Image (cartoon, rainbow, N blue to C red; front, side, top):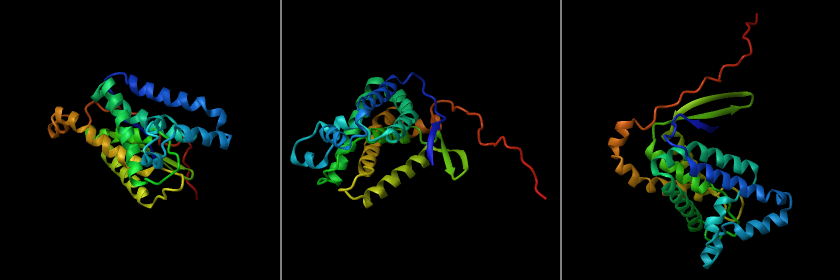
Length: 247
């Protein structure tokens, strides 16, 4: 079950979102040749990823920034870019191009620092844009709580698309990160749950000034939680296989 699109079109071209996506994809493609070389890949990540234990020792702070543009594989990259594409354009629309870029980088750093706080002794390199994107999702929750987001549910041979409110989807996602962080082993690889949770909270809090300038609760009432007229998509849930009755 994962989101595939929202019904909340932006009012301007999200140039920064596109640039961030291009940067992430371009940087990943630059080291694709070493993906199959475990030793070379580890050396690369060791040089540019975020390692919490180094921050605790007083060095390696550049990893807070460089790690945001690295990914562990094709699926990791594709998932993050999908989430950035869904949520980034609307938040950029509300914040403005340059403020959105600054916001993205700040919440990404906050996400990394959260991981350091909760796993200060970890020597496992951390990579990915998901902490910064989680911050974008936190801002989206505050600004567009009632925007409809389509989720694709796949169960064996069955699939269906359901629209659900953004607040429900994002709160469920945040809860999963929090629970995952509690049970995570800091010395094992996997998902950086605390970075996701920290980025999400940082993004939500960072969007508060914009929300207040828009009128706070009055902004929600005026827009009903989704400032732009919602987009409708053609239904694709119906199968073209003809139905027959058995007897």
